[in-house]
Image 1 (cartoon, helix red, strand yellow):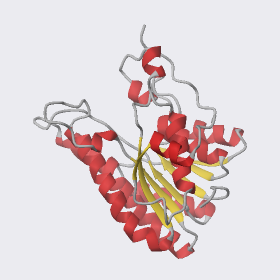
Image 2 (spheres, rainbow, N blue to C red):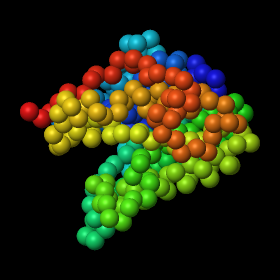
Image 3 (cartoon, rainbow, N blue to C red):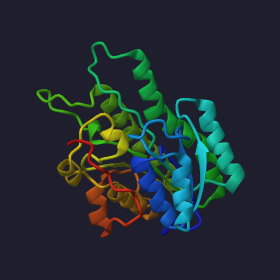
Image 4 (cartoon, rainbow, N blue to C red):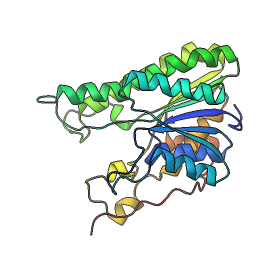
Length: 274
């Protein structure tokens, strides 16, 4: 795809943060965006935004968007998400697997409940959504794009340096990256690109800042959500015979495509530390 005009895109975890930025950027490019996440109402002011407010902001900016609530933990809701999208628009062209959960902790004593939840949301949900959507994308014969949002947590750490995220999150993101490269080989003949995309730096999203003190200096040194959204848009619109099967990072993509982040109307993060 050389542009996203008129394409149908599902963006998971798009009620706020990176997902919201990607949804807004695709909407600015002319895509019909399915904004999906669990959040349909704000229950904590530290976690603003819902699928409805994001969809409304895209429409207010002249784009087309629909809000569909989906708990990625539940296979039946993932199936319903795809069914509702197909019923509304007749097809799917783009999937951005951004929905995530991070429960830090060391291996010894790590809760099985949280392990299962992280694997379900971070690994099984992207795999399942691709299983649900790809047959129709292949049959349509119009190509398409899959973006799996990853993390530098997938990179093997040095044994003398402990990471805050913990091994379970890194393991899940490494699995997503290997799934990405394997799926790319299967989709190459169909003109469907598959790439993993990671931020270079911490992104000061509401989820990242939840319960943690963030100063203005920390926000200034963080990666803007608009940057990874622009990189995501670039990968989606790249030649699927050339831009596929990659484990890519924000600045690398922006440099390769010679693009700058677009102003997509994202509310700027505010310090929460005195």
